[in-house]
Image (tube, rainbow, N blue to C red):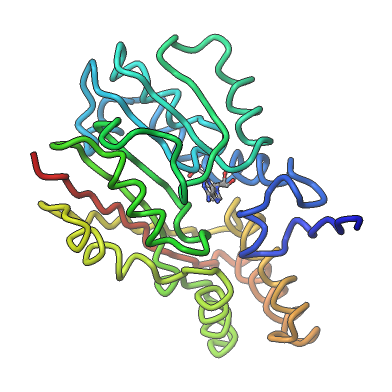
Length: 278
Ligand SMILES: C[S@@+](CC[C@H](N)C(=O)[O-])C[C@H]1O[C@@H](n2cnc3c(N)ncnc32)[C@H](O)[C@@H]1O
């Protein structure tokens, strides 16, 4: 049977089958566009940027759902000669990560695999991190348990996600703004996962749980608008949650607000850190 490629904006399902979508490069480009500012911060001062992970030479790090591997490439020198392993379900992502890493340090490697069945021995890593991955995974708690399994005693797990309930895309018609946020929470598979992560980590035996929030605000049309707001709206129209007229009003209103210096969107990222007892 011939597989029908998914449209790139198939929303929740797209991120768990990047290679099967009609245009896998869409996701590479999306990551490049939406991570650019954060990457710039990481490049400017890697030690400060990665300080919450307390990196030091000799630690072994696993980045689950590493995407194009850009963050891990900056972290790897801080743990060298420890190994830095990037794992992702998508071959497109891993190919891209490898291509971008030819000149990188020798302790960096990438492989295809799933967080749901990590191809590593128990206790193999001192740091296990996942950024905006569990949000999409059909069984995130199995994934989290796998991450804890491969964590060494005394090691640190770090899970970073946006709480999509904090999303504000301000529109003059506030009912449409609220609807947009509600739909983002509903249509992203685990849009409110942040609220459960600390408890689940404790349940899995982690201790010293720390929660670090960071609010991101945009005052003008930005990469998030182009790569999330607009594609999401197409999806919401496709499923009939926004009519053609409501969608047109919403997007035109945001453009109009931007022209008058009144654009406002905001969302909160959370990094949740825990330790496996020694
Ligand atoms: C939103 S991207 C985040 C990429 C990267 N962590 C970052 O923040 O730039 C989600 C990534 O998770 C990967 N992914 C989805 N399901 C996965 C799974 N079961 N195991 C490992 N990776 C997965 C996708 O292929 C994609 O690269």
